[in-house]
Length: 497
Image (cartoon, rainbow, N blue to C red):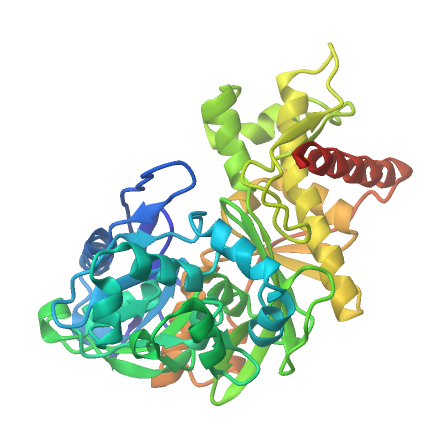
């Protein structure tokens, strides 16, 4: 009797494993943080072997917590930090270099050169992406150019590239399977999302041999089985999606026009735009939402680099709160920000501005400004940035959004969620299970093996925990939006040299 689906949720700072039952309920969770490596400013790396060992250990731990035996697990679904790049030796399975993380900026000058060479529109038209060091392609090129002997080995077909999903499947199958899914492929800047295949022109541009690349599969299908030495049983691996795509699916945003926003370290908003590729005119990305049973869904995506991280900064940098959860009580001590606006562009501005040189700015300070005003301004900044992305999506889609489905750690903050609803003048919905990323991966895997019959069955399991209705649509709110725009303008003006 198959009782569970195992979701492996491999994130930027930790690896998690969650067992879901047939009703989509969490039965067991295990989590383990791993080392963040910063070789020099702007560089971020992970040890691929530590990623693997941490993910393997939490998979066992989650199972042991409820005495689940491998034969009770119907399938494994994988969701992962996207764009993070690993290159390894096909014969030995040993990485030739550390994983270069999505946050890493070492290839920014190369990307700038691509822009200067007039390739922005070509790359956007093929991939739906802006040219940026964020994506995997330039990271692969850097490894080939900077690791001794790597380019020669790659030319001989001896090296494999993968995003974290590919690496985990390779390890789970003892090197038997080298695949990725279409969502992760769509984040490499090497994949033509119109034609749904690796793009040879882009590979030549980056000087990357096609032999390195994984086979691109659907997001929900049988990829292979785990080797017996991993779980003592062969378990089908049957679902893969990058973290934001998995969250969109876990939030059951199955219809065109449905939107979710994940409030984590950053914010990632995705809108299902249906089965046709649409190029954004408002500085959003177009990406593949998922592919199931031969049917592709596309999505607009807007990335906000700093969201929950601003709360961590108030805690660790300024020391005005002791715990992240304290921010809600501190911010609630004042009725508004008293004219303080905070643009937390610590790592540049993401969508819809895409200004990598911008830095954090606080405006409107006075002698009367207290810690509570700064805390409130920080929370409101998360909501204002979300508004900027949502307005860009509405403009691209030519429609007004009636509801926003939310997930991630910061959604526990009712003050933030209510302000978000007021600001957007639409309903904000927090689901019963906010682990939507892992849930999406579980659903994709379970569908492929018949654990769940179809999308209609799983959509019925989605439950609302709380709805936030817009309460205030006042002149003060409109003035706040205008002041926020001025603050962003000030931030961008400061970054100009």
